[in-house]
Image (cartoon, rainbow, N blue to C red; front, top):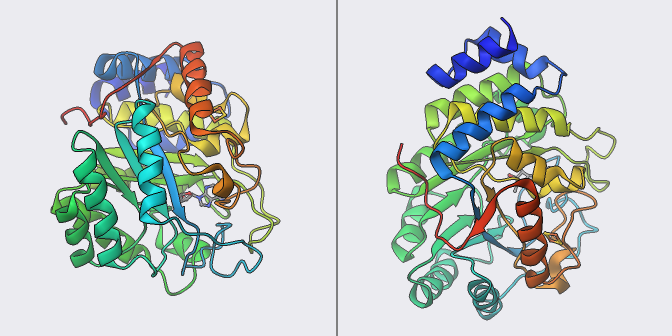
Length: 346
Ligand code: 5AD
Ligand code: FES
């Protein structure tokens, strides 16, 4: 099937057959038609609006040992830090003044933050910023814990499934982790009432085109509000130190396909995309992404939250990132808005 026929079918039905999707994943042409269609659909739903999320990386301690991740427990060279509730509130204060209406608390799976401590943090933010969304990205927890977070005032949760193929999952994670539990978490979160985000890395070690197809199919089953993807990027202090980075081109193509399959979705143009190429985030927006997530963490800890090498924005103050992104987004033809940025109905 020709590319234009695939694009038309995607526009009409929001779906393709397995074979057609595999062809799209495997092609290596820069398919302007696909990007044009994705941009058209994003404009129909979101106009030129780009939502910003203030990312607060509040702990780089992690009990897990994912083979791809720089802050894995087994990385004894990582210098660890934790932010206190006061530190986090200070980040929110700065972020609010800069126009952020969503705060994303992201961290490793750090047992120091018991349910009690997490809920104290969440309810403090909720009390002070009733007009803001609180997004958590702190990994796999029990349903009870998720319920407590929700009751304390959190509204959104990001948990990438990473890969929807259980054999591939086992190549990226130690035995203590399973795709089954990851999926259990995602469906629990949804049932509880969180707006849920999932996603995967593009070009993670051993990933095949069939794996990516499984990722798309899994997302169709989950129907998430947010879908975050970015290229895999290597880190020296992991078992995958010698593995190659993922491809920007394939990441962009998949963003466009995701926009066409999930027209309503919130799709971030990720930091990993900005790290692999100086214009990566702009290209992500043009391919259909509509969210950016500038860093609000204190500058003195930024470099320590090193999931992968050469991460951008580790030296800039929050206000600098905000200004820089504003220009980048405008150059790409869109506009950052001061808005809670909820998902459009689907
Ligand atoms: N390269 C790219 N993305 C990574 N992540 C973790 N390690 C890496 C890496 N080396 C992603 C994972 C995780 C998210 C917070 O960051 O997909 O879910
Ligand atoms: Fe952080 Fe450009 S967005 S410096």
